[in-house]
Length: 106
Image (cartoon, rainbow, N blue to C red; front, side):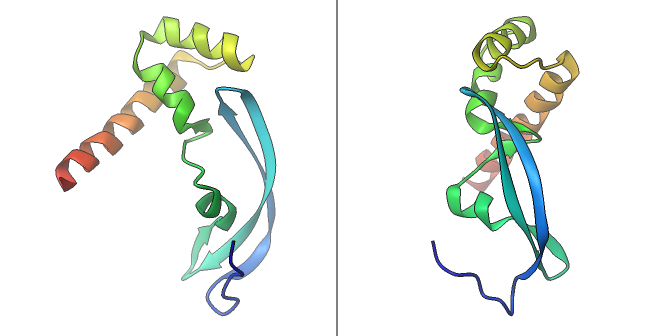
């Protein structure tokens, strides 16, 4: 990992983040940076952390391939955390939009 360009990225403090993954909830602190008046988290970029809200991309894949009810049960059994039907619905829509954008680029 390279050092940040201090002229380009202005450090604004730290924020705790929790994401749900297939191995459970992962909590970590991340540094907040401001670049061109937009908030960015370099740790997410450097480690390739992809999320849909608070849900990791790998957990989203599990939810996409089965019904909401089965996905909810699978996520609860795998991660020991509860996820609502509404959150699953929003997740499916977000992932669907990402897939659609990828197809349009090809």
